[in-house]
Length: 280
Image 1: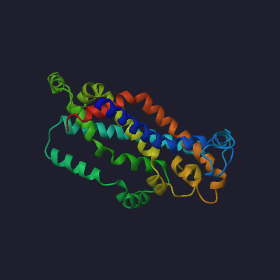
Image 2: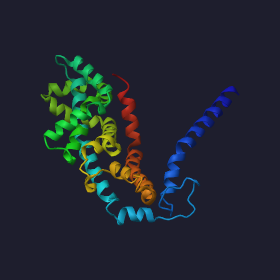
Image 3: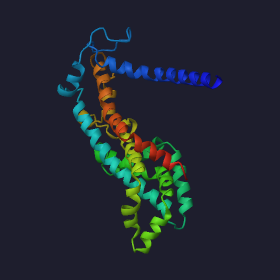
Image 4: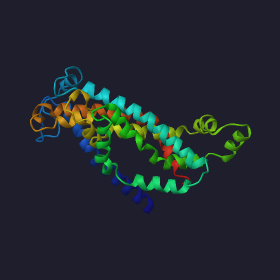
């Protein structure tokens, strides 16, 4: 009886927390279908419903709202960052897990320590370096910023590689395989869960980032902006009464690709996290 009561209380608490967590998401969704263009906090649900915000956002771009361009820019940056970052992470994880060399453990410790510091601490130095190289206000510069330090996040992937039997690599060594061959033809085919986890994590970074994007793309040319900068600009005090519901519609549209990706890859994502936590 006591176990049943505890189970009911636990589920009631979880349902209550889920309800609180879903309130802002539901409000964003219903507001995006409001016929009123500005912010209306007097009622939770719109008094008049309309899909015109999505139509305007996708098919009626103007000097303020250029969502298709922003979406395209963000998607391109996220895809390139995803590929480069995933390669960096997997290569560093393989080197630290499967290879033995001098200074291996000190380098691993340094990587973990550096990864503990927020990336924004270096943003001023990064900005001036890229400005010297004439890479500010370019998508290439933003891709470099997101990808350069990706290898420091190797720890979970290393934990997964630690679970792969050493005997498989030893057999490949006896057959004359090189480290590159073992990496691509032995280890990688067995690492689908951690690859999916790394891909999703790498894709999320540029997709949700605002700070670095705002710092790097500061020319004022709205067609070069990412989704985060463009939507934030809609909240300017001179624009909010005209574009707030379009902002909400943009927030809904931005969440769709990453939500779909996560739902499709959820099984492998969980396996990657749990597999990477078995050994450190």
